[in-house]
Image 1 (spheres, one colour):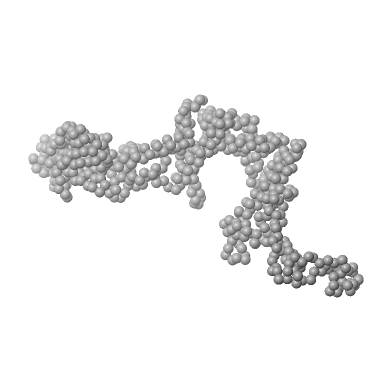
Image 2 (image 1 turned 180 degrees about the vertical axis):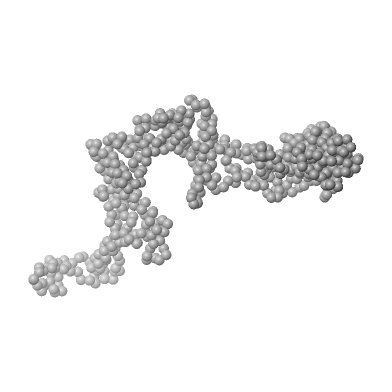
Length: 599
């Protein structure tokens, strides 16, 4: 409901036509027995005696519902009737065939302010009693019914006028009688785009659909969304200052290209589908639970921006991640090179250069490395549309950071021979060639370029690669129930210890360790036999060497006495001592990490 509430206008009230061509309808056909002293043409009644038109010949009923905002608390009085100027109470002319009812609600309280010839509870018809209202929002419902003129008597052939207004007086009006003003009346929620149930032209329907009717819920959430947008720009340090070489700010460029900075998520299905959320601050979700009139049936539909779907939340999180990655790059570029990274996006979109190498200056990239950085896998060409947002700019910046780190710890024989684009290949032959090229590039820098030759560094790198490969393999085998354990039916390997029990190998042994379960068992048996041999209850003797083939053993060697020169091991255990398996120390992985040769 919008105000000031004075329906429907002087001319329309005089002709009893609240909405011409709709009320009354152009094809209005009254009942045959009703019009005896007037005929109906295009919805208007015409007197047969002189051809004058008394007015519209169709009755109607209107219901206004919305929210009345009371700014100052105090005593208020409400009035209803025919329209009159301000500071005057509504009149009673043109109200002979009208009836109305006005309700006011807040929380669990309901006040029937006015009731004129309406079924139900009794109440004053034109002026209500004083009502104390507090500051806040009140739901107001106004029902108005205009009966259909009958024109069945000569006395009813006069002007069939209509009109209705609701006024009030109180602290908000300075205790003057005034129509409910527009700035105090709001819709609680927007249920759907504007439309008319009557048959309108397609152009009129399209016009109504493009009109935005505001609501109290939208106002509340607009303020919350504006605060969140300001907080987002503040936390990410997005600037609103115009750039030195562009007539646009950083924030202005991001908002002017919402499709370039959109977030994307992929929904499972056959096939997979994508859901995109453009970089539009109006899509920021809010936590406002206000849903309008609680007595509305059915309830107002939930706003997709207040209760976003899972796909939208994932897409919004994606463009937040993109913004975070961009701000990390922007801060590093500003600190290291004193450049504004977002200017490369603006110049790429404005200048559209064929050679994009000069655009890398704003990303803090050395132009000497541009040929190496701009060569991507499978011949992907980096042109200006790819540099109009942060995605490929981030890839180039990370590649430049990798080159800087490489040159800080490694002096290549020739940096131009590096082919990082080939290292990303996944084809068998291409991958083998790329690995060979990578090995040659690293070997040339470590050994072939002369003294000092860094063999130990090369060995350390090789050992770390082997350990990482083993860790990745163990993680793969212990996940998703890939390896079944035959000695425990129904179970699967969860930790590397389970694989060790299955393979009889220590899967977590160090670089230089050999620790199979068979070797551990052999060592334990040997230690146990040595311990028992040293006990008092067992004789200790040394077996003679085997005789040569074709000879017989000497009698002395077969007797129970020890041979000459034989010596017994010292007795360190008594006959009553318990026989325990001695602990066999195992070398740790950390102590032998770098003692093995390159394998």
